Amino acid sequence: MTAIFDRYLDVIGEVDVYKFEASKGQDLIVSMISAVIDAHLELIAPEGNVEMKVDDSGGGTTATITRELSSSGLYTLYARSATQGTGEFGKYTINFQLSP
Image (cartoon, rainbow, N blue to C red; front, side, top):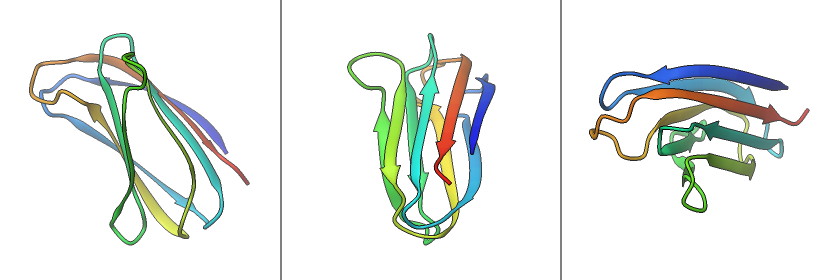
């Protein structure tokens, strides 16, 4: 499954939430891309624990999770600014890929 979401963060401290069903062993690649937001992604496993967190890589503004999923069930993905509370607003894109 592949999907692209164009969204905006326009409130201080805003966190956008994405949910998806997946099976153990599936490969996930998800990127949060923005020219203006210091991107931060957090992946929550079906059991409620944090499976992975990433801030932008290499000093840029893109955060990417590449992961083989550890469980089956409903995953939650949080997308936000890494500098919450500083007034970073603007457009971002989520590129989502989940292997069959």
